[in-house]
Amino acid sequence: MPLIHIEYGALASSETMNDNFEYLDDRVTSVANNLVSATTSIYSNISGLSISLSEQINDIESDITDLGDNLSDLRSDFESQNNAPDYLRGVGITLPYTVLADGYVYAGSDGMNYMKYVYVNQKIVHGHCGYSGGYNVYSGSLFRVSTNDVVSADNPTGPYYFYPMKGAEIV
Image 1 (tube, rainbow, N blue to C red):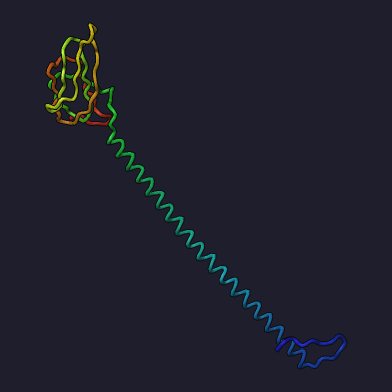
Image 2: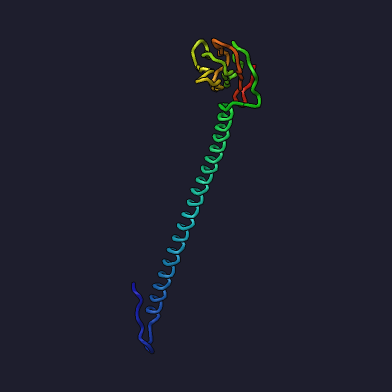
């Protein structure tokens, strides 16, 4: 039933007054219930959002930890695969030479007038002439070798040097 309008100065029956009060009470109760329902829904949404954000934060933290572990593994792999020659641990060698660790061999010319070929496991890897146009030519090259490779030359006069890779253990 709707609210009954009472004219100013008019006398209203108790029934009309009670009907108006009931109507207003029902409306206030309905609005209060709607507010409680809306508040409950908002709190529920906030709670769900909080749980979702917490899960996402935990996932991100886990991903960051995994990324850190992967970077550490990658750094270790990179350091163990360092292909740079360790010039501080270089040693002079005589040929034939059996390589003790992965690294590099430097084969240089002594400037004499002859052709020199250098071999690794009997395959030519380096060749040069020590004399050109009346001048002694001093040249050389650095080439990679692996553990147990055999380095030899048709003329073993040097200089020859072995440089292990950084971090390599020489057995």
